[in-house]
Length: 101
Image (cartoon, rainbow, N blue to C red):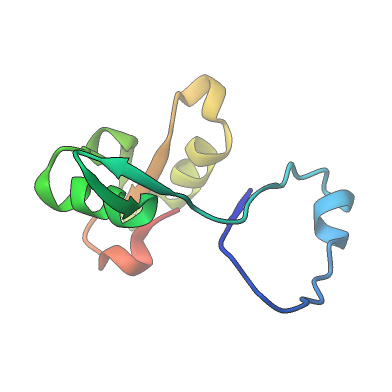
């Protein structure tokens, strides 16, 4: 699990599922301002620019698609990344915001 973001106030988070289920939790708490082609720009804004221009391709990350009726196989594929060689698993025919497994 990767937790990304900046939160400027104290958070009360129950981490029991993390240690109980032996989940590896990696946190990323910020971004940077970099100089890119003579411009000072946030790394988030630069990544968005690359996505919009097509310079950063994310389509190869979606490695498997399943119909909703094959949900068991989809979840098994998403969980067994080593054998299935899956990165991102999605259901076909659903809106993008609800389709990812």
